[in-house]
Length: 205
Image (cartoon, rainbow, N blue to C red):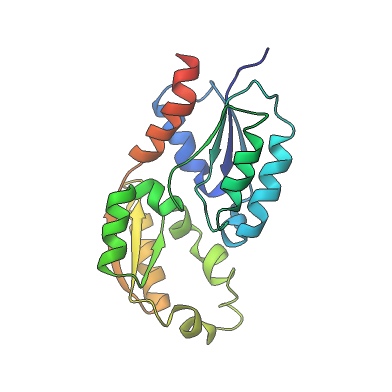
């Protein structure tokens, strides 16, 4: 019987997840499978992709779904509820999206209440802003769309996981390109580490 934990993760979390697993000595304790990071912009593809992967995993293995709701509108939780009837060892990251996962529910709620018109970036999204946001939304081809997409936003908040100054510079440059005020909040990886420990750490202890 193979009880080795499995992590099905968003590709946008790859660097942070590896750092968390390495920091906890769990890098070799689980099988990690990544879905394409561009599903961050195509949330309708998340549930079908996860269903396909779940179907290939033995039912006795614990599984961490390294996604929050992530724009699936509750469809992810509905699918997981059905799946747990046959595969009881499934959990997912808490919260509505990766910003809440990294910042924590209380801190993210405070940021949202302070300014609902906020566009958020993580380290990954700051580093890959051109590919996932600027090109992903077609702003490289149709720059006039910027004001249609972001006209109701007031600020860009970088929720950084690392202390890499290049990430902060990338976040600031992204805010400038979008015409938004820039704020930086270092939130680290603690909440992600807690979720990984609960799902994986207790299985290999």
